[in-house]
Image (cartoon, rainbow, N blue to C red; front, side, top):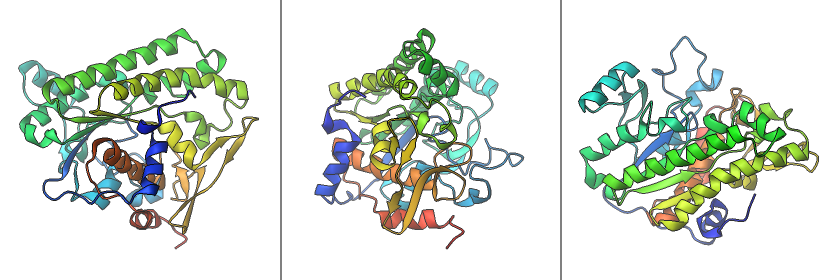
Length: 351
């Protein structure tokens, strides 16, 4: 991975947190937080989009398995406003009719926070087209422009476009695969269009651009891309996306970049020189260990279906707050390990 300017990376921001306890939360209206993205941000407790006939995310631990947005709501609801929890959205054809008529709408139907437009399976095209996440978010933002003078929009998308197994297999064989690189460039274009659309209507809104994750580090993919050469071949395309997002943040003080790959490496580590798993456990408050393994119990970093578990999401939420304070000076109260520990322990059958 190429060297990046430290002031905007999570690595530097975590160091800043160690050196300073952070600012106290500002009194008054909580910071509005909207989300654009895919299953990495779609609420796990949604029982509308995920019907009862399907196995719930987290399996037997579903009731205590939380997305990072759900963690934030539990520990910082008085400081971060994600909108009311409820059922939102309509079927695709109804949403298209409403769009054509200029009526407020969103799609698909799901149960989530009002400002969360992330949908499982979404790809970069869904930012501005198909699901039209950004245009539909703007309809909500336009209802209360003052709220978004200090509001934040998190854009976390791309994995379904170019970072799943099919694309990574192509990159492992050829890091310059034209099909994958073309998709990466289209994703970058979609993100740029989304950012421009938000700032055209709400110029003071802050935006967090989340970099792409390397799915070679997800436990269920450990048997894939085992050679150092294959693993190295994955990086140029992922870097291509991240560097474009980072460049946007470097040019605009209203934008922050969250380096997802560096964030993971700083906690669990990576594979060894031979391409074999060499991850270290992560301790929460010195009382609970989380390993980079797959399973629905909270001691695993990822769930059986490959999505981040509660512990991963809780620590990710911690770092997001650090980033929001360091880049935008929001004065949110930093999230302590002792606050997220009960959320993680709630699903631990060993208690």
